Image (cartoon, rainbow, N blue to C red; front, top):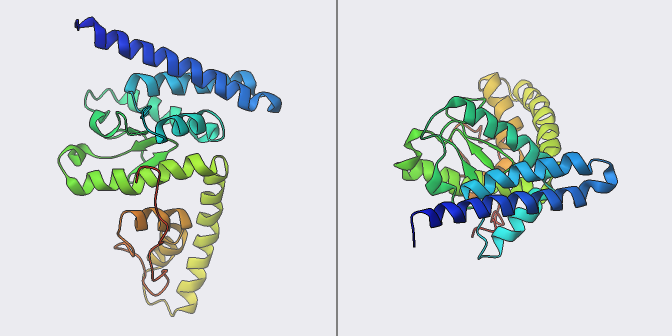
Length: 238
């Protein structure tokens, strides 16, 4: 095999996934009147995915992940393009973590788009903020492969309902946390009570922390938290 063969293979996969993603997305969203825009989003996402070789084509999960990313979950896939753009602007040669992305059905960045220091942020099929030590720390790698990978598949399964449901719970949970703080005699910090109800008790986070085998997580107000992990917290990677 010549040195040019791997480059040719990469180019072919990039073009094939971009073309397939564009066609699937346009067809899925055509009746909504968003076919052309959806096609562009699907093609752009497919091009990045093909270039990074994220899909596991020889397993049942790769084709399923690709199909969902290009159709039902296209809104979160579109948001993920913003994360790719931010990562590209950061101009870090080590930003993309190939060993946790290639043939893993997801993208992983050392930085990317983050909103809270020390916390990873998953947008669509992109895991942001994995940290420079993710290449050497088994604990950081497990957060990616268990916790954040669960969020990747939540975005695929629930599609546009995922960010909506997450937001509604965050707002409602925050209000509930404030009420619990008052009724509970203000036994802990206000922010901790609100964070427990708005973030940790979010069913999507309960699922992810249970998948990570870390429920209840540190920082949660235990008197407010679910006592047991979610028994069915599995993903197609299992």
